[in-house]
Structures are given as C-alpha cells and as structure tokens.
Length: 210
Length: 210
Length: 210
Image (tube, rainbow over all chains, first blue to last red):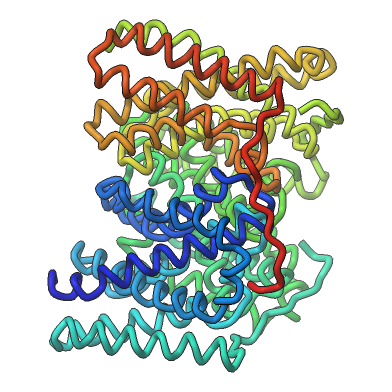
C-alpha cells in the first residue's frame, strides 16, 4: 500500500520528532546529560516499533534499515534542550502531535503485521505495541510506573484506531479512506480524552497478602 | 513429545490464568486502570516465554501463533478486578497455582530448547527464563526490585526442576515419567520453600564505593 | 579478522569478569540472594551483546553458542560475595577493568555489525549498545535511573572508540593496528573522564507541564 504510506510518512516523521521532544523533557526532569537526552529521545520514539519487530521476528528493524531516523530523533531531543523554556508554552501543541503519533504509529504497526499475514488480534496488538511501548520504555528508564497503565485513555485509543483500520481494510474499503477515518477518529477520541479527562476505571487493591 | 504436551497443556492453561490473576493484584496495588490490569496480566503470564523465544531466535512466539492466549490471560486479569475481595482469601491456592506454573513453564521452556538442540546448560537456562522472567518484568513495570532476586527459593526450584527433567530425558526414561517426577519434585520443593520460608543466603554489601 | 579476535578475546574475558563483579556489588547493595547475584552478574556482563543481537536479528547469541560464558560471569559474581571486603579496596582496578570492557565490547560490537554489512551509523550504535546496555539493564533491575544517562562520560567514550575503529578499518589500515589505537584512545579517554570528573552538560528541566 504505497499510496497510504505516502500519506502516513510525513505524519510519522512529525510524530517521531514530537515523541523525541517530549522524551527529552522527561530526561530533563531526571537531570540527564546531553547524550542521555539524545538516547532517551531515540529510544522513546523508536522503541515501540523495535519491540513490535523483535516480538514478531520482523527484521531488519526500521531504524537499522534507515539510520537517519536516529539522527532525526536524537537531533530533535538535543534541540529540545535549547528550546526548553519555549517548549512548555507549546504544551497543547505537543499533546496534539503526540496524539498524531499514537494513531499514525498504530496504523503503521497494523500494516506491518497485516503484511506478515498475522491473525487479526495480533494485528491490533502490533498496532498498540507500536503506538504505546515507546512511552513505557521511557517511563521504565526514568524509574516511573508507566503512565500507560494509569493515565487517560491512551492504549484504548490505539485499540479503537486499530480495530477501525483493520475492519475497514478487511471490509474492502480503499486503504486511503480507511486510514483517514481510523486516524481522525483515533485523534478526536484521544483529544477528547485529554480535554474531558476521560479515564478508565482504576483497580485499587490494598492488601498485605502477596 | 505430543504425549507429554497433552499432560502439560491443561496445567499450563491453569498456570497462565493464575499468573495473570496475581499480576492483576500487583496492578491493583499500583492503582492501574482496567486496561493496564489486562496488559500487565498478559505481559506477566506470557513474558517469560516471549523473552526465551527472543533470546533463542525461536519464532513465532507462542501467543503470536495462538492469540487466544492474550484473551485468556487478559480476561483472567480483568476477572480478578471483580473478584479481588474474594481472591485474597484464596491466597494459599494462588501460591500453589503459581508453583505449578513455575514447574510447568520450566519444563515447557526446556522442551523448546531441547527441540532446538541447544547445549544442556542453555536448556536449563531456557527453562528458568520461561518460568521466572514474567515476574521480573511485572516487578520492573511496577517499579520494584524484582522479587526473584531477593525472595524465597524460586529460580532455584526452576533450576532443580530443569536439571531433573533433562537428566531423565538424556538418561532415556519415558518423557511422561520424567515430566511427572520433575514437576512433582519441583512443586514440593517450592511449597516447602514457602512453608518453611527457605531462602538463599543474602549478599549484603554496604559501601560508598561505586 | 581472526587475528584481531585473538587480541580481543582475552581482554573480553577479563572484562566480562570485571562487569560481573561490579554487578555483584550492586546486587549486594540491594540485598539480593546468591542466585540473584549470579543472575545479575550474567545479565549485566552479557546483556549489552544480547540486546545488540536481538535488535540486529543476529542469532545465535554469544552465550547461547558458548554457554561457558554463563559459568564464567555467574561464577565471578558469586566469587565476589566472598571477596566483598577486599574488592572495594581494589576500586581503582575495577574502574580500569570496566573501562577495558567498555572499549573491548564496543569494538566487538562494531565487528559484528561490520560483518553484517550494516550502515556505518548502525555499526557505531551496535558498538555503543554492546558496551553500554548491560549497565543500563543492571540499573533498571536495581530500580535506579541508569547511570549511563547521567554520570561521567561513558557512552561518549564508546562512540569515540567506535568512530576511530570504523574510520581506521574503512581507511584500510591493518585491523590490529586500528583495534589497538581505538582501544587505547578510548581507554585513556575514559580514565581521564573519571580522574578529571569530566561530564557532559546536564539538561535540567523543571516544570509542572507533563
């Protein structure tokens, strides 16, 4: 589906930059040095796709085949150091860019699994891993319990986007149309979740029993 | 060895459910949301085997080939939310189920490595990774120092089980008999370790030196 | 390049032992039990190469093909328990051995990626992952923010070593000479960084914005 790729590619580049920049801010909160900032930017932006590929045995990984992605994401993270005072004023913009990244990476992850003829449930999971796991690795490296498991709807957005995308493809609609509908729906869902502070119910369990 | 698989399969399903349920309780202690609970359940129950397969280059992974395992473990984790008040009354039962999981996963991991003609030490390690690493990932995602490295005999049980199993297979005994002996010995060893609070000696080191 | 391998191999063995021993001390600070100490030693010493191989799809992993490496590193970690009172007197020696490990593993990682005909940037990154990621995994398992991202020049030393090595190889110099020059330069650079407390500038970012 080269046509759809042409649609997704520029959005993916923007999203990689956005994820690297927010990872840089997380690195700054942990007082990391410049190289650490660049590394955390690369790992966060490219980690979800890397995890998907290692789990599916899909080699070579994206950044291994296209190493300029390391320069793009590492460079964006470094740039953030200079822009830190300005960046937080654009907080809302970053939330939008991160949401674009979530849906775009989800669809790209689904495409990889579809091309491997994986079962449908695995296609959805591959999309979710691509969209969500980078942030989990970032949080683990920053010594936090991953936000993904606790905060506003994020993985749910990825699942909805993936289900819409696969449903549309399987139903035989044009990939471009399906991509557009799934991406816009996912994006609106995510932004509503942020705006309205939509959260899943929490499971709170206190017990001495281990 | 299809015969032995028929013996292990139902035990493995029970053990997957038990590991997902205890992971759900850990998620509840961290106040994760429902989807986080389901994800932690899947990751904990299936993470050990996934790590083994990625380290050995053994594709496809179990849950990728049999996606219903995600529904089984995720579903068991979700169910735990409703049952939380009851579950901790069955603490002892869960310890037994978790111990069954430990020995069953160990033997299944050994089998995979045996089928790949790995050296014997790698077979034991593959069994130990399968049995133990899911809990390590759970603890890392919950921001704890993994229990595996600190608590009652757990990895040791896996090693003993694996050694017995491989020794028996190499010696030419019937796989079913070997599986039974290794599993029961491992199980008894683990339950004794819990009951008698058997622990390895600890290494306690205090020093400013890094 | 079997000749260079012969040069690097004994250094690599020494470095594996040194990394396992420092990991054992970290395990002791977390009060891990003996088996935990052995496991953390193996994971730290062999984790960087394992991560590189999983990312590049380069199978079998080193320790899977040569399981005695598990005995070497696990054994070195266990030995450290008995030697703990003495070990910290040799703090300076360990820093030197760890620095040797950093440059030797970097060069070995570059060699693997060169043999796979990876792009040059990936060769440098493969070297850095081999040299640095073991320590990151150790810190994550010990529930620390990885030192790599915060402390004295470490990843930078790996990058400089890798760049020198690849530049020399590509320029057509004898592999032995290039190995020697890259390794000595990297080693001196690392030891100077420790002695002079050379650090990268830190990125410190405080904001309530998430």
